[in-house]
Image 1 (cartoon, helix red, strand yellow):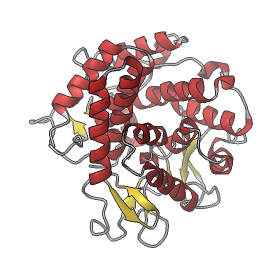
Image 2 (cartoon, one colour):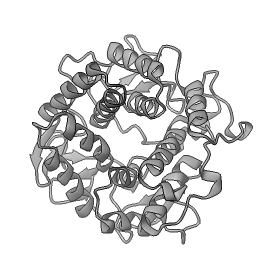
Image 3 (cartoon, helix red, strand yellow):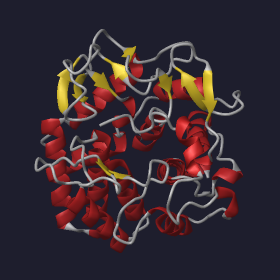
Length: 355
């Protein structure tokens, strides 16, 4: 498994050349306002008829992250047929390890399509949350049973004891204390707090409270540089340090941490405030990728999905309402559009006064 958001800036030149009929310019499409219309357009843009979420910013690959996000959005939209297709494709193509975790990436250009069988723990959490949500909404015991099985596999295979307490490994292989000079390595955005909350109901025999607490401890301890922000990847070898083999930035991964904090609804205001003050503050012209050590802005987040996350953070911290232009979705690229959809879903569920 590799850092999926690493090098997005370097891929910018490839965006216009990426293959697929879904590659249309965001400015050519009108804004999509209602939640149902947003979901329908998102489905048409990014999800194939077979149920495969297509990441058009990464060579049209599919991965557990995308499948989980799409399944979750389908459940929120009450679209049971789309959810069933997404889950069927995911089960058939990614659940090939045999241990209850999913292989993290499927690439259309590879033979076989899955070459790396490592998992991505955030993807496993997202899929399991989506199954739990669908099972609850539609009273489907099969989805509930599968969510429970997944939850037990996650707890058994990718949690371990560290200085944080019961900690989430980003993957079953490659991030332990012996896998790098500064291991173990963790990723703050892999603590999908609302997913952890959902699995606490589905699998109460697991101490999910300890897993949640380790994520809070990570966010409280990994505050680097003058902006007091975590890096995308953190070493736990000697306290908290930005991981050596990754860019030392608060970037495309870590911006999901405040989104998940807000969505869960359990975090202390002070924990969220550090993200508001150090990243989403209206004082900054635009939220940016931040050098976690120096605090310098590395590159602006220009697509609207990233701006929507910042708007959600400001609303949760100060009560500032979403700007009008961010209450609708422009379907630019998979990751930005998905963060936009998720930010609006979190706002509707947790902070409806923001919209």
